[in-house]
Length: 100
Image (cartoon, rainbow, N blue to C red; front, side, top):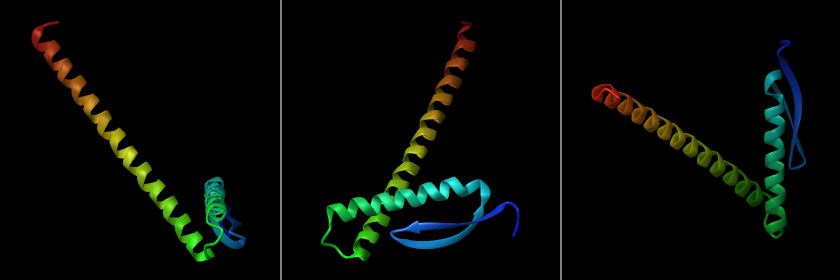
């Protein structure tokens, strides 16, 4: 196996999934598994009468929704940064024109 690769076992909802990943990504994979397990646990506590498949589906949906919201926030912050740059350019231009 490539020395930059690592074989790990990720446990999600009691099931073990063997993965081969880049060593540098190990912490992200473990954090992701932890987030999934915490989300599943939260839904199991809130909806104990639901089937496992429903719990897993709602957990996946919650994580996907959070991901989309983060992407939208990043897009908004990029837009705001671009507006600030444009504002700075206009201010610089006006200062040059007025001689101040």
